[in-house]
Length: 291
Image 1 (spheres, rainbow, N blue to C red):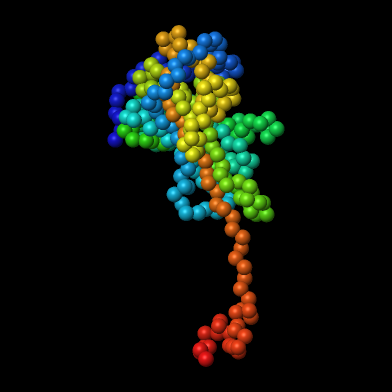
Image 2: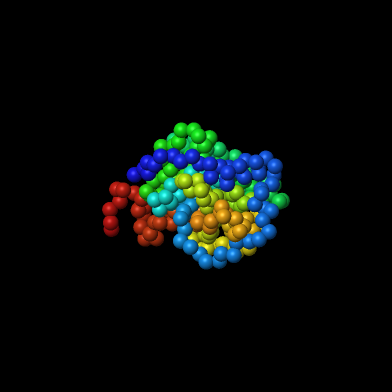
């Protein structure tokens, strides 16, 4: 069921999030980095939103390598809509590439106005993820424009779909590669205070990470992470003295792709060795009769 609500004028959202994202990215500086005080809230609250990386191919019994596969970024708003998002994702295996990121059900069905994926790459020597993708989605591109059809659903929905290229394409490298790697992680990634944020439907609240879980659902949140981070937004991004400060209301779940375990080829059976010493007939002979 689609939540059909009249689109508000997302002035609050644009002032809190879009301006910081666009202008901050243009200057290379985010204004929230200047915050000197930190958020003293230590209690964990129930999340308003849950964002997950979910491998679509996990329902298959097996798959060949190399292959093209898909991973969805899903959102559960527990009946609450959103006005926009800024999601950042990283991968770190040289034989695992995100080819493209497609808009999900929320963008298509609700006729959102903006969906922009952007990729940056890093050298292996930097110790950073080899590929980092940032995706920005907005329900309205201009505050006074015609609003979207909807802001969400009363069930989990797909924000975006990642099309990924898995495995080496050199047949001689596949077995060694599968022996070395059994799981390819995909993870949420933070490089500044605007990464992995969600605006509420009304545009008056900016939601940031509360907890981060690994693909095995083990919490990996860090109370004092630094940029770049895989464990959530640093607490220094929130100034508790500001009335319009962001709120920790999102749980993030990392994901990945499980790889098939390589099996050595089955040994060939020699028909000669299968003949009984006291038999002159081969068991492979369909015309043979028992003695």
